[in-house]
Image (cartoon, rainbow, N blue to C red; front, side, top):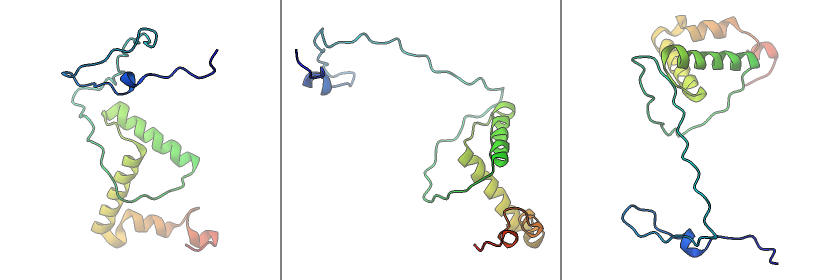
Length: 134
């Protein structure tokens, strides 16, 4: 008895799959029953919900560490956007939008922006308070 695993033949590996091309059927002993095609699960959206925009390639990446509470709040916001507003977004898109809003506010209001006020207020992530330089 051979200890080799049964492998598909060349006709199975290199068969043409376009609609007009000939397909070479696999030998009867190599054929497996085709599974029933699964119906894709669909998200039920409210009336007026827009489909998501196509994915966009980004050329830079950063890593940001957040606390468990911040991650939980972000997931809650993401799920609320999905459930209440019909907006399906991933965490990356949510962060990019938040950064865009914050930077637009900074450009418009400068000294009185939310960013400047929050950074001046300090907090646990403030390097000046923890003694760490950045």
